[in-house]
Length: 62
Image (tube, rainbow, N blue to C red; front, side, top):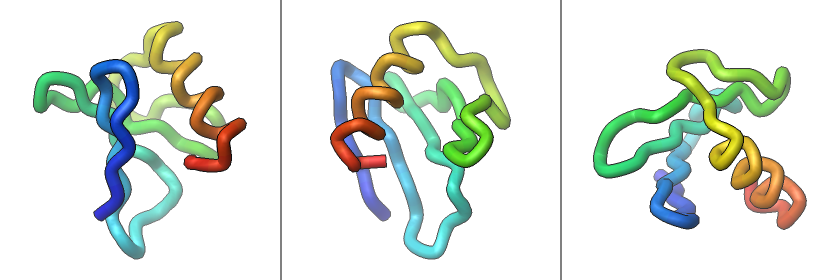
C-alpha cells in the first residue's frame, strides 16, 4: 500500500490496484478518483482536492 499525505488528505493506493486513487480525510473516504478519466468514481470532489490531484500529478506522484 502506498500513501501520500498532503494538506490533511491521504491519497492511498494498493499494490496491484487499478488506477483509481482513494482519498481520505479524518479516516473517512472523500473520493475514489479515476486517474485515467479524471473524474470521481465514488464520492464528491472539491476544488481543493482537485487542485491537490493536479499538483501531485505534476510532481509525478500520481
